[in-house]
Length: 136
Image (tube, rainbow, N blue to C red; front, side, top):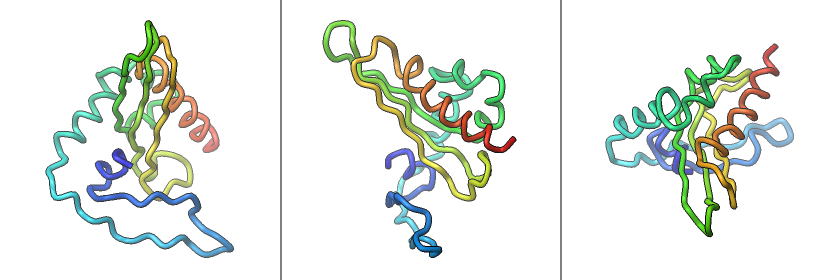
């Protein structure tokens, strides 16, 4: 929800379905956050292009995804050598096939020996790449 709010500039209401029985789900205009988000968005773009998730999204076939993706990795040490890691972000509309809206994404991995960029970001990359392949 945080990534969705930063991406769209307002509080996001999660939706489990885009439509039901042929009718589109109701979507209201988000309440503005009332803060400047340009630096946060630039930082999240930088994570994907030159930061902790850059190597994951620089692979072949991910160029289109990388262009429309912003995200943030995270690593929180837990017990011993293990950490809880994550990647969260959003994909701009039109990045993936049949994707008319901004899409928030997140992966959370518990008890990882890696970092968010090393373990959670590859999970998101694999899911998005699979969605991209549907285009072909």
